[in-house]
Image (cartoon, rainbow, N blue to C red; front, side, top):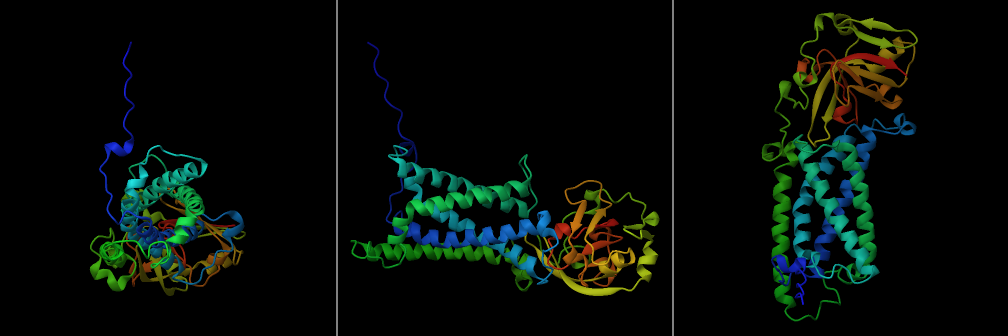
Length: 386
């Protein structure tokens, strides 16, 4: 008779066991409150960023050009809070670690829903913070497009979070307040409270450290502490960072002497660079704010877009902007009416009082208020009135 083979050990038996007093529901709930707020901020600001970059047709002409600093604030919060959430996420996973690998995997419908929500929640949260962090350094070691996948997973993560909250609401409610009835009389609570304070002090230090050393890329008063951020707001040609260079865009071999700006509309026309410079020039101070989280105010000088569209016989019309860039997701950019008719929206020819450099979009680029940096099109060659 063939001997019976033993069942394989449960996953929990193959992993280190941590059963300290801080792996409890109270600690998990306390960290979860902070992580939940961070996730909510990232979700709201992420949705705003996505629809500013790629609005549906019905919204394109309604997006607001004010406040001037709107996108700078929301995207700075999105990236800053997302980075700050990383220590909180690891703290949360550490507090629930013993329960992630319980065996059997589930014991009923409610337990199965809880386990499913936890699996999707953990995977989605790790995916979002990891891909978002790598996006800030413009490193994409994956075969998919970052923006649509990051956006789609954020909704999946939100659904998993809502399911998790619904399933775990009795525990969350019982352990929400610092001095809950469920834990007040437990033996050793004073020692556990001291350990819990130490844990939260460590988390606060970690969150503060990663925030202070990265947020200076958008909060310029702290730029001197910008040690870990991929961009420093003062580093770049004419004192402004550059994401995409002229070499990367393939515009270095273009014959700029033969360049013309084509404006297509009811009364189409072309302008040389000298003719553009001869038109009334306006100077505005606007931030350039990029999806990677960095931003900085700068002085831009050029011709108002509204003046160019009026000359083409379509005042206040929406625009399609075409770049000399040979390839890229934003080589062609659509601009809604709100931006096109705003007096602060320019076809900029100069930056901080000097002619644009090739990396900043020479001979002409778009600058508009409350717009993502990827839509501030560089190396403009054509404006199509829509």
